[in-house]
Amino acid sequence: MTTSETSRYVRLRVDLVLEVADAEALTAAALERIATDEAMPAEERTFAEEAVREDEAEALAYLVDPVDLLGAVRGVDLAHASWSTEPVEYDPDSLEWDLDEEDGVEEDDEDGDPVVRA
Image (cartoon, rainbow, N blue to C red; front, side, top):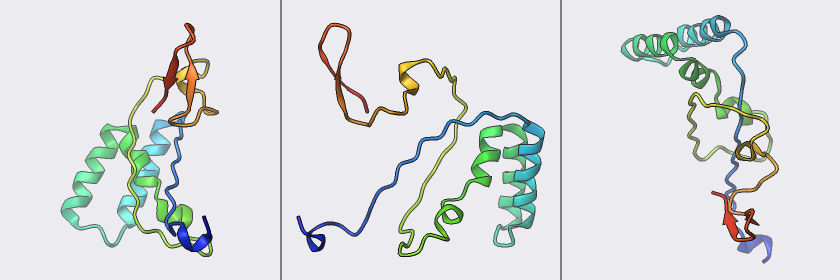
């Protein structure tokens, strides 16, 4: 395929697992960002403040912004972004958390049967 035959759009998937070492600092940072967001309507601000006080994952969601991550990358325009956060149980020794695995890559289980991870 030549460059003209391929899509100009690229889906970038990033999967991060973060340890919250200081919940109070995380919440304070999220509340500060919400307070300084001039585009956020007052009603939404109240809802956002309540959400980040109750849930560390929500606090993190207010601090991570794909526009901020890609704003300095020359030659690309962000066409669409969505992200979510959720608390998870994390075991770095579990195969579930093997970051070297690619989505959809087939491998064999203990019995030699193919397994597709999604």
